[in-house]
Amino acid sequence: MVSTKLTTKLEGFRRRNTDNPNYINKDIYRMFYTRDIYYIAYNNIKSNDGAETEGSDGTSLHGFSETWIDEFITSMRDESYRPNPSRTTYIPKQDGGGKMRKLSFPNGKDKIIQECVRLILDCIYEPTFSDLSHGYRPNRSTHSAIAQVETWRSSTWLIEGDISACFDEVDHRVLESILRERINDERFIRLINKLLRAGYLDTDLRFVGTNLGAGQGSISSPIFANIYLDKLDEFMEELITSNTKGNYRKQNPEYAKLRYQRKVAEASGDTQLVKTLTKKLRSVTSTDVMDSNFVRVRYVRYADDCAPRKCA
Image (tube, rainbow, N blue to C red; front, side, top):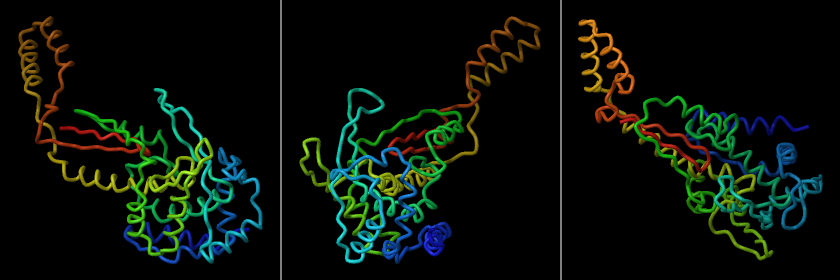
């Protein structure tokens, strides 16, 4: 049974970061000395798709045991833990076009450590992530992102963006700098650094070092990417605030003219003209969509896909 002491500590991180988005988190690494965090991690991922997928050394989660936990705690205490390079494969991208997506498959032990790291980072960062972000987050999905977009009205223009090779281009130094803004525990930062720089074996089983990027397929990579891209979300939120102006759009002069003409036609009893003008009115917006004194900016992000929209 998992001890209430560990769950209380994890929830303490979540509560403090919820109450204070600028809270500096300390004494994190010592949680890797407790057996319970490994049990939690295993239970979290044992039923995931690919949980039994073998890593570069041929092992998977199937080998989880008390011996593993003993090894984890010993290697964490003296910081001798070293993740193995991941096994890689390529699959076709869903959008077609013949492009391929590289996936990384860590071995069983590294999956456990990655989930421990993800679990801790989730408690720290999830409470403060932007409401405009929907990818790889609990109770959020493509459906919640689409639902948010569907609340937008009267768009003048919309841009759909895709951050090219987002996971592959995560700068490790930048990510570490972002983490240090909220985390004051260098041993924990060093552990994350080890995971990021573990490298992988290519399809010819040659080792490739990783000085850049967070491999897709890694359990911890999605939250690394969200922490990294949260800076983009913050920037967009500031942009939304600074560009919002005006209480309402001015009326479209053409619409006003047609309404007046229809009113005159109604007064004269010209029913055919009324019908013609009514039809024209339905094809014309009542407000000036290019009114520069009325501006609204909207934005939503799902992982590395985003959609800014402007009403102007």
